Length: 254
Ligand SMILES: NC(=O)c1ccc[n+]([C@@H]2O[C@H](COP(=O)([O-])OP(=O)(O)OC[C@H]3O[C@@H](n4cnc5c(N)ncnc54)[C@H](O)[C@@H]3O)[C@@H](O)[C@H]2O)c1
Image (cartoon, rainbow, N blue to C red; front, side, top):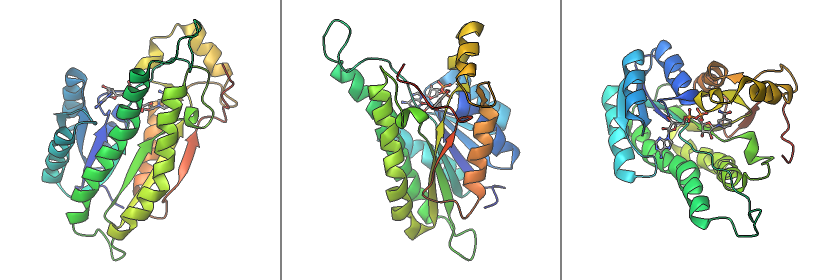
């Protein structure tokens, strides 16, 4: 699939992995809509990419509908990248024996899992109305962001891992459902990436994390995530797949 003059929706596009993806898709000719809660960073990214910023909460249907409508105005909506997400740390039972806060668990599921599906279902409706891009009826592709923590979640990651496992679980059925309209769906499981979140850690902590990577012994760069995302969006035979991007790391219990 050629991205030139198509529109692309990137949630969480104001920062980190989504931000690098917005940059790369714009450099490949896509008109990018940044969907994020962070207005300051979102506007700056829209300016840098020549795209549009729509302030939206991925869990809010009206917000997502507005973002999808804005994207469809810029050109046929062919690319949807779900990067919006949060991480929260809490154990199933806390050290003092009290149970995991249920509202905290629900919040992580709501943003990471329900939010991802909310964007998919609304965006797919708009993608279905665009003319096919080729003789096979291709209309575009979706890339979701899970995590290796969705496979081997660490102590304290129960809510986050549940949400990311759900994203993996939806990948194939979404691909199957959307095959009827010629839209593919794949999911990336990143390992440890250098994003604003990680940049706050002291250098010694980053070195420790880097050493836990099999090879190369460093954090992933957001640009590397963006490159895999662009590949999954444009490689027409990639569908229903879940791909680790992690330098061979395997998370230990702690
Ligand atoms: N950085 C890593 O090492 C890593 C590893 C595995 C998975 N991930 C996943 O990659 C994705 C991006 O992470 P990142 O490191 O770039 O983080 P980040 O914090 O830099 O970016 C996440 C963006 O999502 C936005 N966001 C949060 N909640 C939102 C909501 N309800 N609606 C709209 N936007 C919302 C934030 O404002 C932020 O701009 C997340 O889903 C994260 O779980 C990151």
